[in-house]
Amino acid sequence: MSLLQKLLSIGMYNQQPKQIQQRQPQLNPDFKGVYRPVGNTLQEVYCPRCGSWECSHTQIPINVPGRVKTRYTANLNPFRPFTLVNKKEKVVQQCGTYYQHRFVCNKCGLIFM
Image (cartoon, rainbow, N blue to C red; front, side):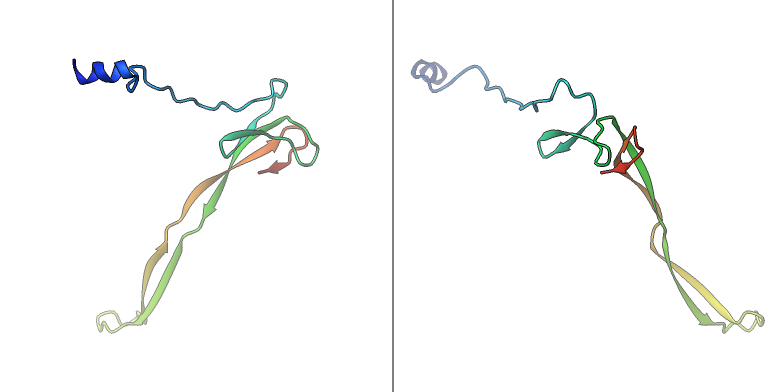
């Protein structure tokens, strides 16, 4: 008798793998708006100004300007007599764009989180 048959006979081994249960959030079937994820659940989104459920997702672009550090030194080159100072620039922070996710009310036009 093999080890597998012994384990099956005493009930220590199940051939059927355990199924992982995914908790589905309980959604209101009457709600026709958008949902916001809060932890492991979904929350209905209502407008804070007018209380309407007619909201939609939007993305707002945020531009971050770059920063440059500038250093000036005296010109010591005799072949360039009209240049008084040398200018050197060093990039401290790159410029870029990122997007913020917001909700917009389709009735009153309020943009909120």
